[in-house]
Image (tube, rainbow, N blue to C red; front, side, top):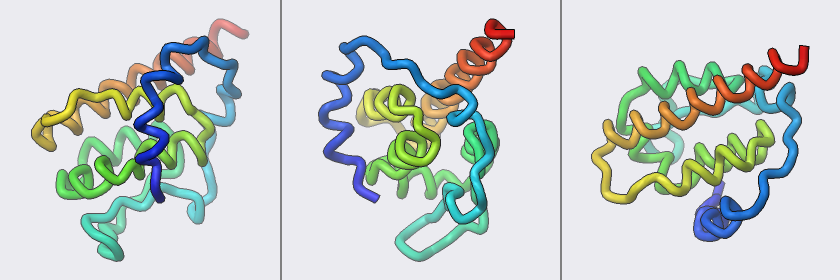
Length: 129
């Protein structure tokens, strides 16, 4: 998937003003063919897939930590969230997680970011009503 190069420039992007995002697009459910497929290695699928940001958080919480170990360094989570769901801000924040964490700690940090973003976005929908 290759999000690595974009992660390198995340610090620059995060220092810029956030652009307006389509909250309904970020929070929508995508078709299964566009879902995030959790793997533990190239071609080794876990049979766990996420079709929305909320579903991603739920699945990330329970999927084998080996999947986190496989996907995070490759930038797969960041790529899917940015390119499929359209949330560049969250994808960039994921790139800024402290290096050297144990995989369970990394999972916790990712979950914290995703859940905070879900709360932020669902709150903005409520504010618009």
